[in-house]
Image (cartoon, helix red, strand yellow):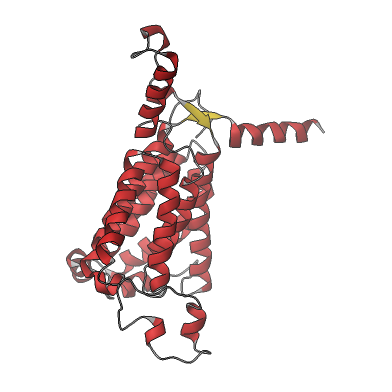
Length: 314
C-alpha cells in the first residue's frame, strides 16, 4: 500500500507539479514560426494547394468503391479565386497571433479550423505535416502557452495594474521574471510524450514495413534517390560508401524505437537530444524537401531543455 501511495505521489508530481512556463512559451513561438514557413512554401502554388487542382480526389472521376474514396471519404470545396486572399491573410494573422502570444488559445483553436479546412480540400495531396500540426494546435488551444513571453502576459499585467488603480507596480510587487513563472507540468509532459510516442510508433511502423532490426537492406540509400533529395543528398550518394547509409538507417531506427530510454532519464537526455537533433539535421541536409519536417521535430526538443534540479518539469 505504501508503495502504491508513493507511486501515486510520484505520478502526481510528475504530471501536475510546478514547472517553469518558458519552455512551453518558447515551443509555442517556434512551432508557429515553422508552421508559417511551411505554409508559405506551399502557397507558392496556391491553386494546387487550395484551389481547384485537377488532382483532387473528387475531380478524378473515381467510383464510390475506389481506394481513393476510402482515403478521403469527406472533403471541402476548393477555395475560389475571390476568397483566396482572405483565406491566406487569415492564416498569417492567426499564425502571427500565436507567435507573439496574443489570445493564444483562441488563435491556436482557430488555426485548428484553418488547417482542418485546407487539409480536407485535398487530404491525399496535403503533406503529413498538416496532420501533425492539427494535433499540436489542438494541444496548444488548451494549454497556457501565453503565460510568459507573450502579448497575453503584458495584457494581464496591464489589466492587473488598472484594477488596482496604479500605472506602474512598486518595485517590491513587480511580477516575477519570466524564467521564474510556474505552471502545472502537464502541458510540458504532454508535448514530451507526444514526441516520444511519435518516435516509437514510427519505428514500429517501419519494422512492419521494409525496415529490419538487424539489417538495413539499404532502404535509406534507396530513399535518397527519390524526389526528396537535393544537391547535398546527390553529392552524398556519389561520395559516401553505401554501408554508411545503412549505419545511419539502423541508428535512426534504434533511436526512435527506444526513444523513452534516451529522452526521459536526465542522465541520458543530453545525448538523446544531441542524437535526435543531429538525425533531423542530416534529414534536412540529405532530403532538402523535408526541411520543414526536421524543423518541426527539432522544435519539440525545446521542452526537453534542462531547467534546473529544483524544477519538476524535466
